[in-house]
Image (tube, rainbow, N blue to C red; front, side, top):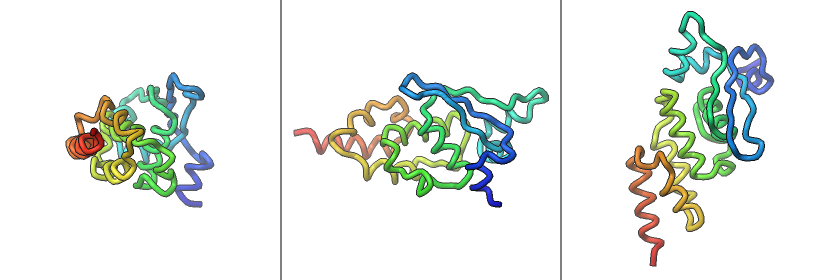
Length: 153
């Protein structure tokens, strides 16, 4: 038995992330192991160490974003388990923003930039440029702005 199997089969999970989103199919839950979450997230560690800790976190976010973030905490990468092509570039920015919200320092801007920047195209560049968290990420912001500037006639 390995960690991947325990995660995928929900064996001995003791924490639930409840996600809600206004998009179709936008609510549900992800079962996880509190020790994994606490090891990677300062916010969750603080919550779990409280005397009357709850074993549930409710968060307003898309399943794909939360699943990518939880898988990152378990397996340390954004791929190949969750193929980064399945997440839009804007969703990848949301993964990074949620990582910051939860105090997950191991997921860096550079890691996300390596996924986002090759995906830039005329169809998605404006949605990325307008993403609410872009201004917090100088490297990605600079590269996206340069790309948009090159695409304008």
